[in-house]
Image 1 (cartoon, rainbow, N blue to C red):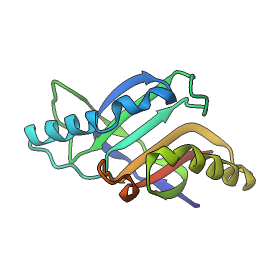
Image 2: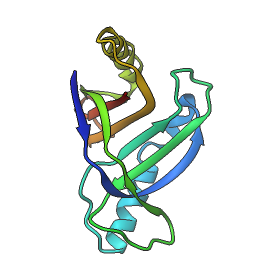
Image 3: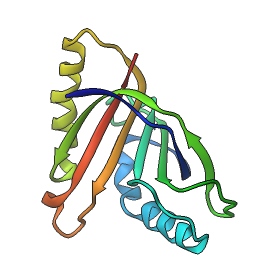
Image 4: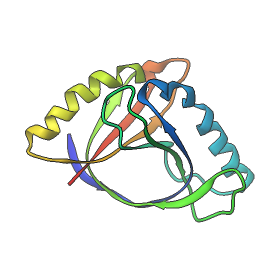
Length: 149
């Protein structure tokens, strides 16, 4: 586990109200649309697709806000997506190698590590998809960032 502050970034994004059990319906779809929009607008992606969870509590039925973001170089006018400055985040981070289906066990191990250090979370979690391999999920690399106070 690493404690750090992730930098602020400008991003194209879409917001959804969803639950943990329904996340699979967004995997890859909105990311492809974000990359296509960036190409259409001739704006350079500057970081990995990021999923930002606001208000998720681990319960599969809790409705929370999900933002799916693509960091870009500068602000653009998109008719499909919004653009915003994503603030920096003080967080506890870890890298997960492998299938996203193992996220529940990763979080089940990671969250107690955070609390064992006496830290409190701030209700925001980010997943940065450093490598996405839909054919061979064992090749996925994801940075998990849990916001801390």
